[in-house]
Structure formats: C-alpha cells, structure tokens
Image (cartoon, rainbow over all chains, first blue to last red; front, side, top):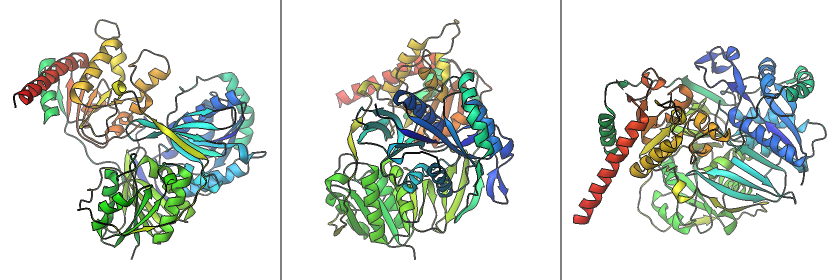
Length: 267
Length: 344
C-alpha cells in the first residue's frame, strides 16, 4: 500500500448553536463578540481530518493539520481536536471569520504548506472541507491546489479508496443525491470533503497527550499573517429580516391535521 | 464597459444544456451588455443552436475529453474560453461541475470568484449568504475577471427559439490523470432525494426516540416515512443528529445518509414547500430551510424553535399519528385520481 503526505486545511468556526450578529469593525464586517464565541473545528474540514487520519493509519502516511486562526482560539479548539486523531499541527496566527477574502486565506495556507519540512510534493494529498461553515464559498481549496500546482482536484468528496499501485478512486457529490466516481492515477491531489463516511472519533486522552507535546510548541511559534481584503467590498451585511407569523395549533386532532396538510400539499 | 461571458456545460447526457445554464444566460442578458457564451462539452452544436437567438457570440471547447466533468480538463477549457472572450465578468451556474473548477480558473487569470450568488444587480453588486445561510451580504469586487456562480432557481431562465449558431471553436489540449468511471445513484427504491420535488419532508431525531409507550418504534417510523414519500413524491431531508446516529451505530432509519442532511452542515435545498417532523427547529436546522417558501412543522413540543417565527404553521401533535392518517388520505386521493383517469 502506498503512503502519502496528507495535509489537512481546517479552520475554526463559531459553535453552530451560538447566536450570530453581524457588526461593523474597523477592518470590515465581523461578528459581535467574535472572539468570545465558543469555537469548534469547521465541520466539513473536521470530517476531512477524520478521513485523513483513517487513511494515514491504513497506509502508514504522515498527517499535518494546517489551521489559520487567532492563536488563542486555536489553542482552545485544539484541546478537544487533539484528543481525537494523531497529527502534527502547522498553525497560522491570523484573523477569524467568514468575511475575510478566500483568495488571501488560500495564499496563507499554501505558503504554510510549502514551508512544511520534508514534505514530499509527489506524495501530497491536500484535504479540507469543500466549503467552510463561515464563508461557505467553496473557493479556498481549489486556490490552495492551484498555488501548489495541483491539477487533480475533487470537491464534495465522500470517499477515497486507495489501490496498491498508488491510484485512488474518489466519490464526489453531484446533483440529485448521487456520486460521481473518478479514478486518479496518483498523488498529488486536492480533496475538498463533504461529510465522508466516518463518525467523529471519541476523545482519547492518550492521543491528546501525544499531540499536545508538539501542538503547544507549534502554537508558540505560529507565524502571524495579515489577510488582505483585496478588492472585496461589502455594501451591506445583515441577518435575514423575515420573521414568520407562526400559527401554533395545539388542539387539532391527527385527523384534522392530516386533512389540512393533505390539502396544503395539493394546493 | 464590462465584457460578459456566460460559461455553460452540457448536461450528463451530453446532448443539451441544463436548465441552470439558461438561468445564467437570462441573468447575463438582464445586465444589458452584449454577452459571449462559452460552451464546454463534446457535441455542442445543438446546445449552441438552442442559444443562437440570444444574439450572443458563441464560443466552444468541444472534444470527447470535455464530456467528463473533471477538474484538469474543465479548468483548461474554461481558462481558454475566458481568454478568448477577454471576459471581465464571467457568469456561470452553480453546478457541481463549475463549483469544482471555476474558483481555480479565476486564480489562473488573476481574478476572483464569488459562489452561491442569490442576487445580481445591474450595478454589479451581488448578494450571497455567509455562515451557512444565517447572514446575508451584498458585496462587490474591483478584481477582474470576476466569476459569479449563480445558485439554481434564483434567476429566470432565458427562453427563446432555437436557431443555427455560428460556433467558434477554441482548441485546447489536456493530459488529465483522472478518469470519470461512472455515476453512483442510490437504488431506485432508496431514491429519497428529489431536487425537483414540490415538497421537502424533513425527518428529525424524534422519529427514533422513545414514544408514549416507552419504546422506540424505528421500524414503524421507517414504514410511515417511506409511505409518505411514495404518496407525496416529496424529497427527504434529515437533521444532522439523525444522520449521525447512523454512523454511530444507533438504531436509525436505514435509508438515511449524509446526503439527506439539511441544515448548518448539510444542504440548503430549494423547494416550494417544506414539512418538518420531529425536528426541534433550532437555528442550525432552520438554515437548511432558508430557501423553502412555505414551512409547516409537526412537533410534540409547543415551545420548540419552529414556533418562534420560523414556520408558518406548527402542529403540536404526534408525528406518527398524523403521518399515518396523512398517508391514508394521500393514498385515497391517489386512487381517486387513477379512477377518474380511467373513466376519462
């Protein structure tokens, strides 16, 4: 079985259960109390990390996690994530949030990947989420790939199967709840993951202890970057205004409800 | 004046254009500038003919290797079309094929791409959602070329008579390392995702929980939900919690996968109506409903999130009971329709 050098790009996002309120900051739009909101690993990127870890274990591959976020928030999230799978962290100390420019973020990620010592670009698989839960653009991974000169790219990936000759089969989500099946002859490649097939691993304190030996020193040495806004200009940023006038029916029988819904469906 | 290019590709059959392509053409024509259309595929003449009366210049990259949706060949084709058209604004439908490739093409051309565009204004400001449909923003960019991927259903499709197109072919050579070997669909009896359905039916985790008798009734839930989908033709969505139960080997509806997931970490489908059952209606779930026009919910909890201005109607009731009755009603109506059709 061939081995790979797998680099996972994963940002951090506000916990989905938090209330989000946009505000204007000196650097552009942001979220109210953004630094105070509890953060989690970006969900789709998280799935890519778990898939990468499973692949690394199966193939004896090396795994790095490249993450761009304020150092303090990253440390907080790593306390949990580092207990799940083994990886080597490559932190980038930069701004948080969905209103940053995807192209500038991709540049910072690609630069960080290129500085990883002993990275074999011929064995490189770059993983990440196909979209983030912040910008939800689906732009960053493609640009990271382009910057690294990788022309075999897959998005909305739910599965990778590696063959003994180093080729691999990829399942990508397409319209209508279906998958496109592709065969790629070899690394390097970029895979932007959807949910994959693996559940979130349980926390394992022993894995956490191993990871934290390298995570904490890496965080201390994290390179600070500025993310340029480029020519992106926001005219308005707002919460959806629509508030529905909900009719709450507490006393209707199942028969009455069924009749009403059936009529509504037929309308 | 901006030079507008509309990029389209042939559908899976490789014979015609998908509806979203006509929507992108319609959006481009509304901007008021002359447009160029670039087509990617194998046999593109009939697709070009379908757009002939738009008055647009029509370019194409056509060869057998461009029939397959694949990053390396699609990127080379799109790049060549953009260069040939000297485009400053590139409009394209947000298909899986173009979403995969156009952000990278924009980088190659020193441009930028915006995806999931839901609104395009004549002054070239665009509207899109952030934080998974929780915050809406209007934005613009000075960078050119600027690629705008339009979400399906957000613009009226161009409708015009076909003609005979004067097609300009652009030669592109690629050496892809990837081969598309097929499409994997769920088996017919498991086909629960129907993008064109009028109704989205969302099953929440409540279907697998203990019911009034203290026992879960997952098998019954499965029969009821499948029955409803067959009777109504609805598309099936699910909350993340229910999908995750499956991957954690808990008892769950066997036909649910992550592809059914709607919400914060799932899809945000577009259907005219949506019926939520046994969901708690909190924001992470509701973002999956952002583009559902009419929303109703069945839930045992009168204080659930749906009751707070997110659904049009919330029925406080047992979804098992209601769905059972509903299935009987829908089946009866279906039989009545068949009987009428037989008489006619």
